[in-house]
Image (cartoon, rainbow, N blue to C red):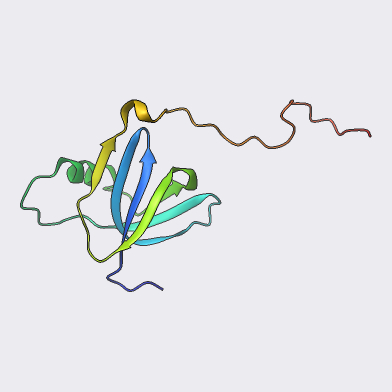
Length: 115
């Protein structure tokens, strides 16, 4: 089990944006293909107004656990202290089209073969 003061930097893709958030808990989810992120860390007493931090606070305000697909994960780091959260617009670098894996016969013929 991780120490109580352990913080993880989680970087993932979401709708053409690269999110960099901080959390105290991460684990492989019981939902296959997802990482569970909980106990997000935000600065409570900011001296400088940070638009990204405010946007993320609003987006995750009512969220207790977030389930992020494995294919969206970029990186998870264990860090000593929280840094600045970021949302980077990747613009035309990333397409919003995602290809899902196809199982079975790609021809669409699901009849069993008779060899």
